[in-house]
Image 1 (cartoon, helix red, strand yellow):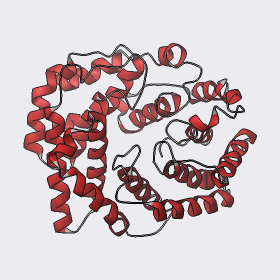
Image 2 (cartoon, one colour):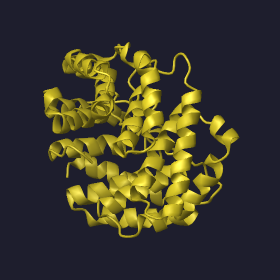
Image 3 (tube, helix red, strand yellow):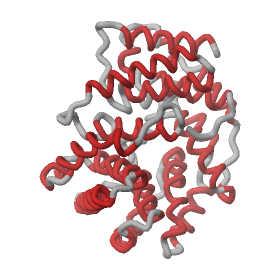
Length: 347
């Protein structure tokens, strides 16, 4: 293991053990994301100490869960459920996904069933919750609970559709997987179509919104890449040939050098807004859609992350607490470096 990786992870473990620790439980910014980081690093680097810490941290999370916690994916119960599902599927922990998720499901069901509650959520929160509901539908075998999941997914899809306004599909001035709604919106609708779920209604929604989506060529090449990765999986399920034309246009208009040298600034080394996600998007497209392959050199991404002056800022006590999560912090950046070093193209 590289000395910087060991130093970062050891410092992380030390801070988690501190009585002054104030880490939230969440997937994006808190302990659940760090559990995933520690488990992955333990496997990638053969460090049993990291696995032991991950086990202890996961026990803390489960013991601290309350039905009154937020239900979102980024900062709440649904994210915990997705994290546990990931760990089980990857063989880090054992257990029945549905049994372990039952209490979280109940808390989510209770609040998502309320129209006023859904109406008060942001579009990106609703999109993220559709990821959670989709994941649960893929795993749930109990007919009664599947029915509840299906009904909630239908309600969330329709709530989301009703709040789409002018500007919904606008891109932001900088790359962000949290702020740019178009790619995750397209991807999750395609995922439901691939499951054969609510196909007529989703097909109508896509048909209605097609012009608004495909008439936009994102300004940022990184956003073009992000949209392309979302559009490709939906192509088998849409009849309108303009979608394939759109995918081909996006592919033609992506300049990977421009992304790496102009759009990704020195401190864009975190998953939520930077190079680790660019790496995984490129790997995803090249692995699954050879007709849309985008050649790139992973070593360039590795060097850009390694050479960032953000690592020097890590030494400052005031900087680390704001960048200690899996999605928005140094653990995600270090995980990306390790994946590139070991030529691993997917989590």
